[in-house]
Image (cartoon, rainbow, N blue to C red):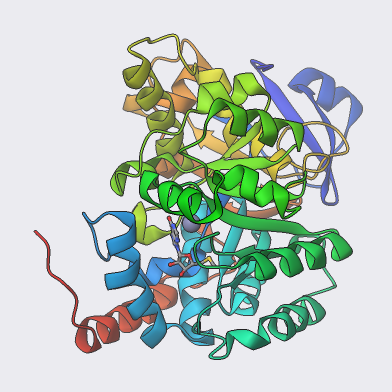
Length: 427
Ligand SMILES: CSC[C@H]1O[C@@H](n2cnc3c(O)ncnc32)[C@H](O)[C@@H]1O
Ligand SMILES: [Zn+2]
């Protein structure tokens, strides 16, 4: 990881033209617009490898429950009654604003009415991989699961074609909610279109046990027998894996999203990230949705990801800061299949970068920038954000979105959720 003490970037359209010492950049480039960012740290925009953006409407709902109870008693019922194209749009716009302000320039999503997520991503200026969600039971955007293929094809056909900032994807919720036939046709459609296939995998010990008993093999082997595993498959969570499963994931070049805060909050378990990396598996970092996190801050995620492994191994040398930072940037780009264009500051890559205000008490003094980024910086320290060369966050404000209006709309949605839903009260 290269740090340039007094550095600069030159942008040409949506692309980085050069990265280097300021003296060098100034000698070789004359900008139409130049910005003095002394006192700031410039770095690649962060990549959120797994989220459900619209779930900001349900921030913190069903707190302090285990995954299956959380899903079946709180989340699925509330989604069945309150998810529609409008709520998905406002929730996703709120999340796009939160992510951009926290220095996330790309997110990988999976939900229902994913067209509305695309609309929000388009308007906010963020980069995204957008996965239409598929389950084998009636879902908010598809009462008849028998028509899922039609629904997926319609989503792909209508996907905005005039941008290279948004990419389509399909998201099979999990092996316990999608049967073998569904997993196979969805993956083959993804292969046909050369797009990312996403799935929640081996998140809890209970679901792994159940599937292993039902199918006679562990989940990774089950997906492999169905032909699901390749370099355009992204598995979220992957907490409960054997060494043999890790080896197979590496062999098939499958990507993993590690979602540490969600795994901690739902007490799903401790993903074996150092072992995954040693096995050669590509791992990105994700927030998961706002109901199981409860925010969208990858700085906080990096901090916890590293510290949890240290505590688990009783060894502070485990999962050092530089490795964690790679997960949130270049490795994240790689699990989305976007590594040639984003994830690092290099000429020819997209100009996706952020500026962090270092002139603050909690960031003073600065000995080791990488350690500071992982263990000290907060999302709220991000002052400026560029996506594809566009200055989308200036002085902490998202330029193209009326933040107050978005918060008001999501507040209205939450008001209806509270009024119309009989939720178990815990705590
Ligand atoms: C088709 S994906 C959207 C679907 O997934 C649900 N969800 C959100 N977080 C999790 C999680 O951690 N594990 C399993 N399922 C999750 C979300 O509520 C939607 O129903
Ligand atoms: Zn998820």
